[in-house]
Length: 118
Length: 109
Image 1: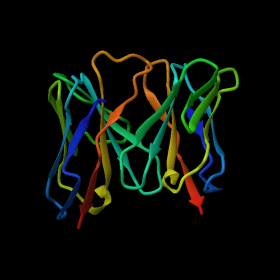
Image 2: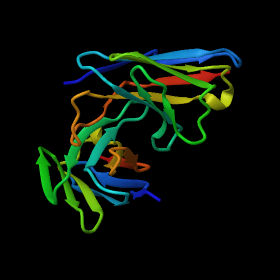
Image 3: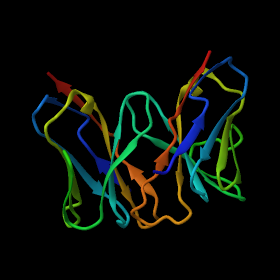
């Protein structure tokens, strides 16, 4: 089945530093990738939709200058958390849709990145 | 607004059957998904319904009634490994996925 690779799986950083998370579709092309954040015991919250070759679309309340998204190719999207603060500590998950998707096509998720900002 | 409701938590016994309900109000409907998510892991796809009725996949079945805005996930012969959160998601008229908050299922021996 379709595989999405997300790296790193776990990262601890100091407040004020930046962290880059990579999301790759390994065996299919993904025009669109999604970045989610999930706090403990809460559901997935869509942060932004990443489109290959164009600017990402951010959900209301998500700071685009803080969460930089780059989707340079059909198989790679990156999320950079800039000037991270402890409140940014969360579980970040990417997902990708096959370019040949249909309404019935499920999202393929990466394994997530646990970010802890100290 | 768009809304998906699921129970927050359910408890069931190993070997038994459990039904997890999901009701939705969305702008348009292009199918409903069920995902399983173990703690600290990404969701994994379980089922997709777009037409009314029951879809069976081994121990898991999913039901949809579009007129009622209602779905359920039925898990049979429960195993300890089924302890997880179960997420209901609806694809709306813009093909966006709207997620429920998830139901945490606790299986007891």
